[in-house]
Length: 164
Image (cartoon, rainbow, N blue to C red; front, side, top):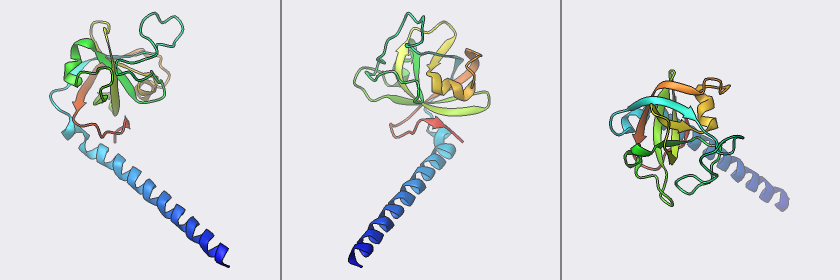
């Protein structure tokens, strides 16, 4: 009987913990959906977005590590900002904490981690990694998305991903 009670108590504690984590995650998403635009600092930078993956066959530039020192990961919500915009996004340098940005295009919004910089093609302001680009262009057939708005986000507590 004692073994059953302790097992039931442990199961109850695990269920309670799982429910509180789920509630906390859903509350975190709600914060992003309503507060993101007010947390964006400064005017929006407007230009085109493209996608990048240094591991894609035929790619001659870039490498496996981003400017922040993190390894490129096509499965996270991340991006490279144009080199001339580096300071607007907190420097983006090796060992520094990545900054975050709100990216708006085609009626959609996402938060991305800015962990890389690059000499992008003229007119382009941001290179989205594959996961971020697929949010706007699921098949990756467009290649370029015009009229993208990018706004730096203050703080380092953001959870990258879709907004709203």
